[in-house]
Length: 120
Length: 408
Ligand SMILES: Cc1cc2nc3c(=O)[nH]c(=O)nc-3n(C[C@H](O)[C@H](O)[C@H](O)COP(=O)(O)OP(=O)(O)OC[C@H]3O[C@@H](n4cnc5c(N)ncnc54)[C@H](O)[C@@H]3O)c2cc1C
Ligand code: FES
Image 1 (cartoon, chains in turn red, brown):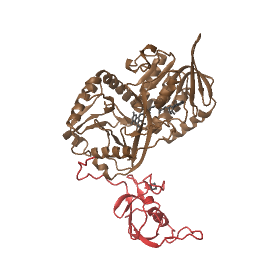
Image 2 (spheres, rainbow over the protein chains, first blue to last red):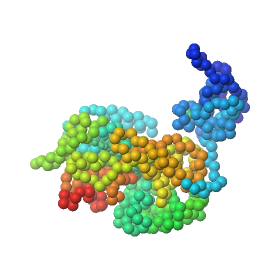
Image 3 (spheres, rainbow over the protein chains, first blue to last red):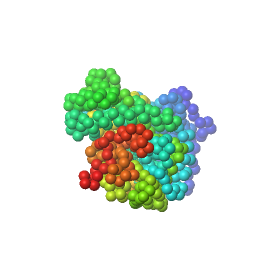
Image 4 (cartoon, rainbow over the protein chains, first blue to last red):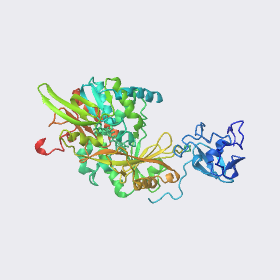
């Protein structure tokens, strides 16, 4: 995937220091585009992307960058492809070991349903 | 657009100022009807004051789906044969074409962006009987001067390939479309203010006294923010219009109902026209942002107080099921939000517009598809209040028709 800009000077291992008595979950790795990055249990895909220097999660149809806006699942700005499922909300999806996250371009096409006589 | 909204926000600073002592026309209700009326009166040099108990555009006018309904729809019919309602429908559809013209010119006249899009509208039929109904209603529309075309299932497949392949057919009205309900009222009201209208919010009307004195009629109106006097009073209180009317001992043939609307996540553009159904409750359209707005009159609880409305889960599910039936592609599109609002329905289906014969000086303006028709009804009323044109309000809209015959 070309054209995705990653922030410079980010230490992929770095996270906000935690106060005493609070600990992070287990560390594992996920794949963003083609790159292996680290994640911790309990983090959302959005957290993993931002902590690893990917504030841009998708582009609009016109190519404008979008990332976390509402952080709570309503704006659909943070859409990414997670394990081949397009239009997944990064802020609402838990990161999991070996997950494959791909930044998304535009919105996914509407698919014609094979059996379109869906009976309501 | 953002600039205009900011401008309307600064125009709203006067909303909390003290009430004026006296005004020519007092308008109760800061929805699309009240604000359009203030504008059309201002245009004619008549001063008015809009009183709103809460904030402007918070009720039906700001919670609706924003569709323009010009074709004859299910809720306007009292039987399966539109001929039974012929006179009323002819009157109505003639005015619908006028409402279409008004929406088309409104943005230009006001010099604001109200999000008006004339996308055309399709009304689909699933059964043979529904398809016949499309043909018979189309004849009335043609007689009233509204352009509509009936498309067979085959023609429809070509015209709208995204619809379910077994839809029987549809009628198409090129003039239908939508506007943005979040923009219309604030921006129309801003222009009304520029023409001299005053607006006060957080001012609930609590009692009205009508005094028929030597020097004409006066209304002494008590509000939660003090008293104001007016020569003429207009009831534009939507679902609460009967409460206002009853303050004068006058009853209106209306009832309030709660309705709900859903919005989905954005998807790539595919659906241009607005979709409706001749036999089931559905309106479906895709906005310029890519989201789908799904409504069509599914019920919500008609709570009148408190001013927050709850939704029925069954309505959201039922509404989505009809949308899916008509457009199966929506199957993997996620709903983001469901909301509801409360509006007035007329018991005999005709709007109520004009001056009361039994209480001169008292005016009413309410319509059912009030987002589509509100500005046009307000214009009709403004015309009649200054009598600058021939009186054009249909007889069937009479304000006193809900009163017992003896008191009219
Ligand atoms: C969910 C929903 C979807 C809809 N979809 C569509 C659609 O797609 N297309 C369409 O054409 N129509 C639609 N409608 C109908 C349309 O929204 C209404 O008919 C229209 O907005 C009514 O406008 P109004 O100004 O009369 O009422 P409102 O906008 O309700 O304004 C009345 C105002 O009066 C105020 N008021 C009440 N009592 C007092 C008091 N005592 N003192 C002071 N102020 C008071 C209220 O606070 C309110 O702000 C829909 C309605 C709903 C609820
Ligand atoms: S940030 Fe808004 S949905 Fe994810």
